[in-house]
Length: 195
Image 1: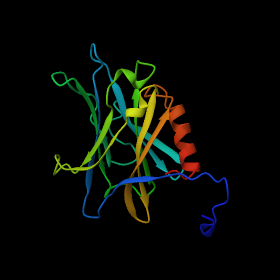
Image 2: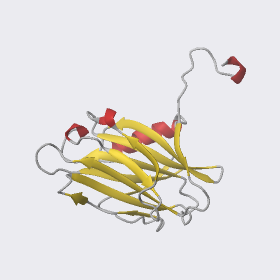
Image 3: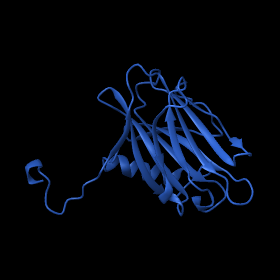
Image 4: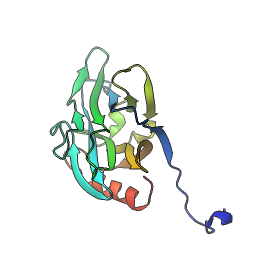
C-alpha cells in the first residue's frame, strides 16, 4: 500500500459500483420496494435527493412527484399490491435530459410511522430499463437496515461524463417528514469521498 501513498493506520473505503449506464440508455427505473409488516398495511418512503457536487438542490418524493429543477426525475407516489403484500415507490430518471448542474442522485428508503425499518421485511432495490422491465441492470438488498429509521440505498453519480450507480447501504436517522439527518449523512459521505 505504501507504493500508492497510503499511510499506516489509514482508513480505506470500499466503493461498490452496481452499474455504469451506457450512453445509449436514456431512461432508468429505480423500483424501491418492501414487504408489508406481519399485520396490517404500512408504508415506507422512497425518495431521491438531488445534488450539485456537495450542494443539496431538492428532493423528489411522494409529495413532490416531479423535479422542479428539471423534468428528468419523476416519482410514482404510493403503489401498493395488497394481494402480494408489497409496497413500491418507483422513481424514473432520464439521465440524457438531466440538467448539467445535477451530478449526484441519492436514493433513500425510510420508515414513516415506525421508529425503524424492522417492521418491513426485505427492503430492496431493482434498477431496469423501462423497455426491458424483466431484465435487471442491478439490484441491492438492504437486510442490515432493520433497526435504522432510514437507509441511503444507492447513489447515481456523473463521473468523467458517465453516470454510474453505486451501492451506498448507509444507515441514517430521518425520513420524509424530516430530511435533515439524511442530508447531513449524505454531506458526510460526499465530504469523505465515499461517493
